[in-house]
Length: 446
Image (tube, rainbow, N blue to C red; front, top):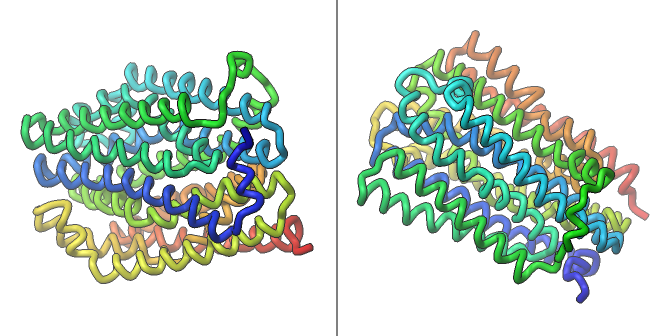
């Protein structure tokens, strides 16, 4: 049976981008809503301090599970180019190695979390009154991380197969389950933050079950046992591309450590709670932009592998155009409706007073971020890990972390919030320069 991914080389780019991006966007929306509603329920039914606990724990577990996302995105870059070149055997070996790597590496990190949980929580900002609820939330989530990692890996492979609707469905299953179980465990049973943790952990397992069903019954990738034998060259190729995403998540985790400790030093638990709401909005509000970026990856990767450079150029241009337009709309909504948005999360008057200003500053440069996201994604799709890594790390690693460390010394907590748009502008300029040069050389018009 012919792979439907071959349509990536033939169909209209705009139609392909819509086909890939809408399910990806909806899937990310449901994943974001999952996190958002979790935060709303916890803030309103348990208390604002519980939001701070979530802000400490979720980056830890997301860092571990993002190993699956890294292997999924990096491996799918290899997979898409293999399919584009017509090498089906390499595609099977790549997928088999993605499965093995995801479970082995994420499980090792879970073991580390079990033995050194208290120390890890402290590093990520579990200070003062945040510590007790953070510990309670941590362990059930940690044990479910391999399932979440498999979901993140599997979703990227599904998109590489050009079957994004199933990726979307898996996230919908997880989100709906988490919302229902949150109501049941927190509100009905009164299990507090432990109930929130159990609801989230169960939702990860249900997502895993759906992804597993897809690969058994619906996937066109059917690796055999021989494909699970260690293949050094393909393993290194997957890891080289995965390292880009993993390094980004590692830097994001380092940023979380720096932010939580800086915010606690500047404003205690209150400041950490403010950022807890802001960070949830960052995950939620940008879902359509991230969806277009996810939809762009397999199109660019497949056509780059097939040497259809004109189609790669077109996909870059359209992706930036649509993602940029959506980012402008998001910025306008945040600008005018920041206060009512914050009021959804909590009834604490101090949090409602201080968070809208922070939210507006953090989103101030969002209209231009499409260039940075699509530009970095292109280099990953094209199998150029060094450039992809440098551009991916530019915002958080090269600019935001140093700015968060320096600016609060002069401007207090305002320095934290204004660091975000400055980092966005600087990273976008650098990415734009690299992308323009690439399009004038490697992707020049024939």
